[in-house]
Length: 304
Image (cartoon, rainbow, N blue to C red; front, side, top):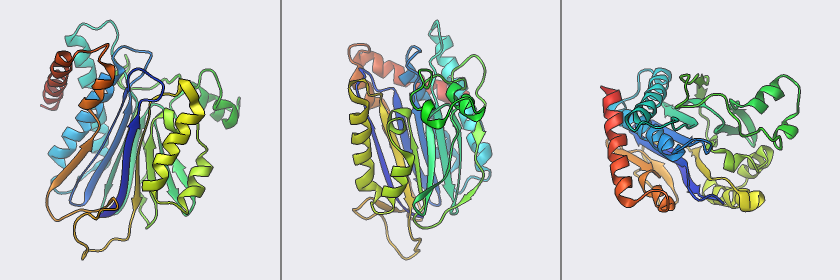
């Protein structure tokens, strides 16, 4: 399995980065996941942390060959993440439960499928155009679908950040699933938080992908998104992948970021615990260690 992948997260103009993201792979199976803690609720970064850790933990446990039912895996893992967030809030007697969005993708046997909750997005690009995308679980998206406002109006609508579906809410999340997509060479999958996709034109991303590698394009787009948003820039995070020519004779990873999965072994790359360093005024180092231990214990309890 051969692909090029990029991952990064920026704090933007905020005091705390509430985004979490990861990718992990084993043999012929790969997971991409991103979560955006909701800023209107306490400890949104912890909800995002729990969500990403839960999916990564389950992926490591179940992807030792291939996932027999990827859709079922995504459904169960996202609900497990929701329960772990609620369990954390109950244990700490929080007045309100931390909440987060999530997008998760499984690629295996040359097929991609995904699930999402909230307004973090997935874009699937093919041949210089947007082939498909997730639909936000937001109030403004409902207005767009009803024909009340246009997509252009939605981009500047005062309620554009209000979502009705998330992990950690009073009502368990309703998970939206994709169809299966057979990957073609050059296909590119991007998952991102709203701090990234909000300021940028999807059509421009598609056009530039026709001439630029994601390893050069994605950092530029992150800078452009941050610059366009200005001092009020939200956290912005991206995991982007391009599907490459598959060749069984190729060896392990090459230095340009293209990855070929060996016959055995597991690899995971996450931006989780160290990101709490951006919030030292709010959370001490000792509390960070205790919180992470509690998150891991909550995940283990939910997985039993």
